[in-house]
Length: 146
Image (cartoon, rainbow, N blue to C red; front, side, top):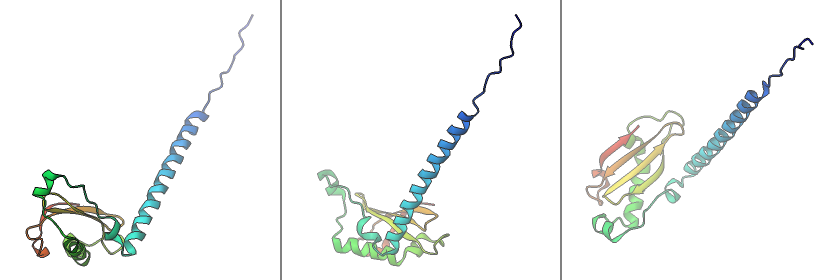
């Protein structure tokens, strides 16, 4: 009996289906990231940047002895000083919006302040050492990224 040529069907749809699913998930993820970034930019443009984004760690007895105590007035003065002089503190021009925004100001336990900033395209971080909390012009840059 002669053998029949049986052609096997190849499923070429599987790789395309997998590729489509991966592309769809990537697009959804990126759309979510853009939506969150838009919310941040709107929050910053509304002038409420320093109010809700300031982070503070709970204080332990061991860190309380080492920490420079900033009063609410001093913390507000630091935030205002950063807001008024952000362009000169960063030292370069923004790429996207023409203006820098402070996205976070963190008062650390070791006499330092961490400033996170962005322009919608580029971001960076500066850590300041506080020499004299009463005179905010004496801050020294400990580290600067980007």
